[in-house]
Length: 269
Image (cartoon, rainbow, N blue to C red; front, side):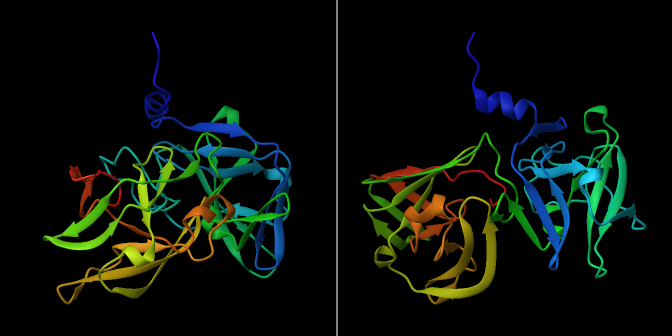
């Protein structure tokens, strides 16, 4: 009997998962390189949908000491999928928390899991370090999942985004961005957005797409905060959607060729 790979991956979410990498991995605290490893492992702790790195303790140049901070409590009934907004310190994995310190008193969190397959390794809080390098390239947000990707394709579908009967965008020239495990996102040419977009101070980072700046569409005189975003200087994988506008269609009405599309259910719903 055939299996659906996405369903098989979801069935593994509750487990501690690892995947070795042949990349040279380095991390800095300030200007100081505190780890340099050719033996890194990608780690997904239970419920987490994006990986971080674990490296052998021998590959850490900084000091590794026991953490003096109590971890936050894990919810008794946690959600089944944890996106990167769930703090690193929240976990279901048994083990002990540590701190990696540099010479200039900069520090980042780590975790040593009670798992024989990770013996001698420390799992690292990606966001706690100043800079990460794979080989000679800087990476942001989190390491790429080797089993996830994005694809961008030109679309001729007629898309209309609406809220309360007011049209926000109307286009047949969108770029469709397909991302593993997520619903398709349509990126609209800015000239096909028919309401004002008020700039926001919100910024987010995507490991695959880069730095996103946010906008609040103004509908009937009222800004709808952070409902739209764009990538003005995207990473190479997302060059196809440069300067196009995407909307949280979890919170809008979208018709495709005149047919209403049900609102997708995601962590941003």
